[in-house]
Amino acid sequence: MIHSNNHSQSLRSSLLKYSFIVLFFILIGKLYFIQVEAHGRYIALAEKQHWIGKEIPAKRGEILSSDGFPLATNVPAYLVFAVPREVENIDDTASKLIEIIGYESTIKKEDLDEEQLKEKLDEEKKQHVDEMKDLLSQKDLLYMPLAYKQDESTKSKIEEANLKGIYFEKDYKRSYPEGEMASHVLGFVGKNDRGEDQGYYGIEGFYNGELKGIAGRIALEKDALGRPIPLGNYLPVGSDDGRDIVLTINRQLQYLIEKKLEAGVKKYDARDGTVIIMDPQTGKILAMASYPNYNPATWQDYLKDYSDKKDEELTDKEKLAKKYGKKLFPNLAVADVYEPGSIFKPITMSIALETGKITEDTKIESAPYPISGYTISTWNNKYFGLSTPAEILQHSDNTGMARVSEAITLEPFYNYILDYGLGKITGINLEDEDTSWIKDLDDWMSVDLATAAFGQGISVTPLQMMQSYTAFINNGKMVTPYIVEKIKTTDASIEFTSPSEKQVISPETAKKIVDMLVSVVEKGEFKFAVLPGYKIAGKTGTAQIAVNGIYDTRQTNCTFIGFAPAADPEFLMIVKLTRPTASTYSAETAVPLWMDIAKDLFVYYGVAPLN
Image (tube, rainbow, N blue to C red; front, side, top):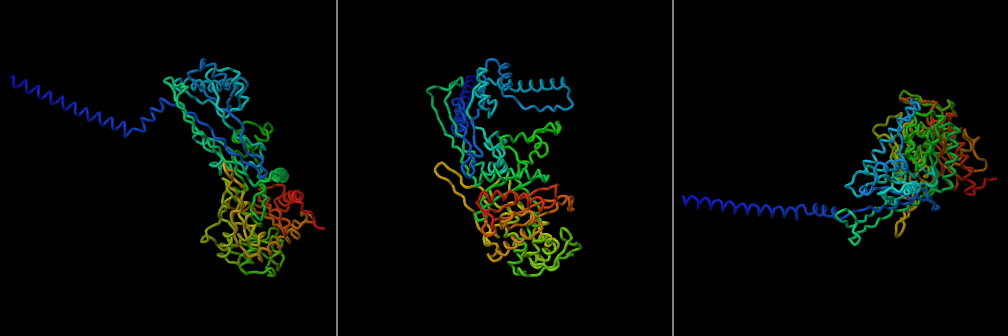
């Protein structure tokens, strides 16, 4: 028995010893895990217990016109936030905040009588008050954001209400001093899915990274109650403000074309319109406008649903929002891909001259052109027999152009239009730029070559057509358009010039095309609208719009592209009107509008008429 007891004691002693050894190794393992494997997590938890952080917003960079005037800038705004544990009367505070800050009603007023409407509005307001009460009730939080980007007036009203536990942080709000001017070039600032300021469309979108800057942060040591320790550590990381961007846009010319374009769209009852003015020697964009336009500061208003209102009850802005909505935002100068029609003919003619398939004296038949079961005819079914290349352009003769393309043949034609920059973006650095549409070479049929010769069956943007025309002006060299003059950094500026030049055709061919374009203006069907005394080179384009696969003669895109003075141009300008109903012809819509703008441009550049 004694032996048995000794054995039991020895066994218990061994078990106890091994238990301590196992616990020791478990403890060592746990310490290793805490100190090594999970070191970062526990440091973060400790810092969260001992530190509070506050973001320092970066000021968004300005967007300036070429003369340094701010087109997009910043004005002071405020974040309204609460320290919930300091709020004394949650119900009263929530009600007063909603009364001052307000909210956007989503109630449709149609089909509601006065009593029903009041009841709905009361319910909606109560819902917003309840949501505010929920935010103010988070007593375990030191910091609760309530409303962003509030103006000085709202801040003053909240301060006058003397609400305990409600504070403000200074921030900035995007402002557009010129209102709707250059809205499609600028774009606007909204919120991304993380609630951060984000640029959309235009310069705001493309250069968002440069404009937004880098937010800073202040870290303060806190006590057990979450209050900053007066003599505690203070770790600031300063913000880095965004860079300013200077555009090539001339504010005077921008104002001019916007007013003229709006009047033209309304006069000719067009769906929309676009005007671009370029320095043709450098590619610098001097003005770029689309209409209808919008105010970037209130872009959200153009997304609202106004279907419950009658048209006569709507403001001009509300009418645009009801009709176009977010379709207003893309810049039609770079995002509107369309069949250019006859403004493409000079490109085809230049290819034929460059490849030696024709000369300026070649006689080309003007007559119906049968091909692949189709018959190509002129726009007015008038024909002119044997014609020179200049006469083909003057008459805007589709049949003559089809015969010219036949002489060129497909592969050289295809390669040259790619050399002219079609089928790819220009690279102007606007977020919404689209590319033209050119079919793969293997997909072309003989009829495609014939129709492409006069600008159908292919698609371009207005800016791409302008880029192509710079080759005629610059002795065969095509320049790349650009719209940013410089990006200002803290220490210096990044200067921009014309990104590249490309020799597309010879100087001899370019001069011949310019001479032909002068003859188009002086002898073509629209000579009645031309400004007397000025040498202008240009070409119209009236392109029927395909509806359900069939070209509709009642719906057209009307374009005129031209430059002046023809021998040494001060400007290259394109005017495009979509679906004008007052007339479906460019000669009666786009040309008069182009000439109306050019008249003021001649005054601006000091170009006197010839005697």
